[in-house]
Image (cartoon, rainbow, N blue to C red; front, side, top):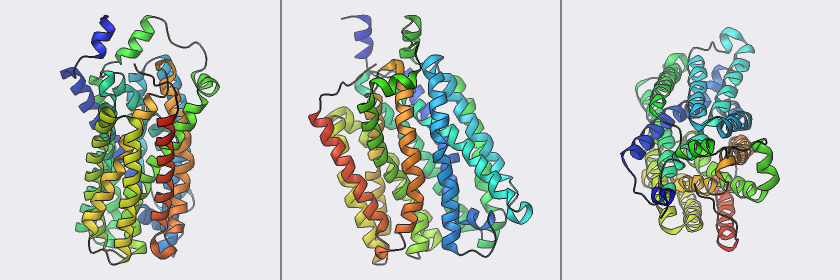
Length: 432
C-alpha cells in the first residue's frame, strides 16, 4: 500500500477534528451575518423605504433586498474560486469572512429612510451586495477546505459537519431574533433593536477571522502545488468546457438546498406571522427549534452519505422534505396546534442540505474543484435564491397559505429525479 493509500484509509485524527471544529464555528459566525437580514425583513422594509406601507409590502421590500445578496454570489464565488484553485484554499477562506463582517457592522450603524431618504435603501443594497460576494466564496471554499483535509470515506460527514456549522449560524440568528422580540416592544425594535442584531454579527465576523488564523492549507492543494499539477488554464473555463453535466447536476441539487434553507427555515417564521397570524415570539421560538433540528439533520445526512451513498441520501432527504413541509403548513392553516413538533420535523428533513456538498465535492477533480463548485452552486443559488423569496412571498397569499409547501414539494421532486439520475448514470466520482 502506498503512502497516499495509507493516508486515504486512516481514521480521523486530532488535527482533522480541530479543522472541522474551527471551520464549522467560523462558518456559523459568518452565516449568522448573512441570514440575520431575513429575520428583520419586515422591520427593514418599514425603515428603509417610504413610510406608510403595509406589512405585506414592507415584507416584500425587505425580502427583495435580501435576495440581492444572492445575485451577487456568482461574482464573489467565481473570483475567489479562481484564486482558490491557483494560490490556495486557506487565503480565500479567510478573506471571505472578513468581507462579511465589515458590511454587517456597517448595516447596524446605517441611517434609515427618515434620515437619508432614498439614499438609505441604496446603501443598504450595496452593503448587501458585498455580503453576497463574501458568502459566494465562503460556502464552496469551506466545503472544499474540509473535504480535502479528511480521509475520502469521511467526506460526507466532514462536509455535513461544516454545513451543520453554517446552519448553527441560522440557529444563532433565530435565537437572537426571538430574544429581541421577547424583550423589546415593537417600537423599541424599530428604534434600535434591529441594530443590536447586526452589531453582534459584525463582532461575530471579526472573531471568525481570528479563528481561521489557526487553520492550515489543505493537503490536497499542497500536494498539487508541490507536483505542479495546478491548472494553467482559466479554471472556470475548464469547468464549463469539460464538466457541463456535473455543473447541471450540481445546480439541480443546489435548487433543493435553497428550497430547504430559504423557504422552510428562513422565510417560514415570517410567513407564520403575516399569513397565519402566529404571535411573533412563538414564531421565532419555533424557528429556533427548527434551526436546531436542521443542524442535526445536516449531520445525519452526511453520515447517511458515507454509509449508503450520495444517491440514497438525496432520495431519502428529498422525500422527507416534501412530506414534512406539507404537514407543517397544513397544521399552520388549521391553527398551528402542533407547530413545534412539525416544524422540528421539517427542519430535520431540511437537513438534505447536508447531503448536497458531498455531491458537489465528488463531481469535480481537485484541480478545478473550487471553481466547479463555486460556479454551479452560486449561479444556481443566485437564480433560485433571488427568485424564491419573491415567488414564495407571493404564493403565500393564495392557496389557503399552502403556496410555499407546494413550491417545496415541486423542488423535492427535482431532488428525487437527481437521485435517480445518480443511481443510473455512470458519471465519474472524484476523490481527493
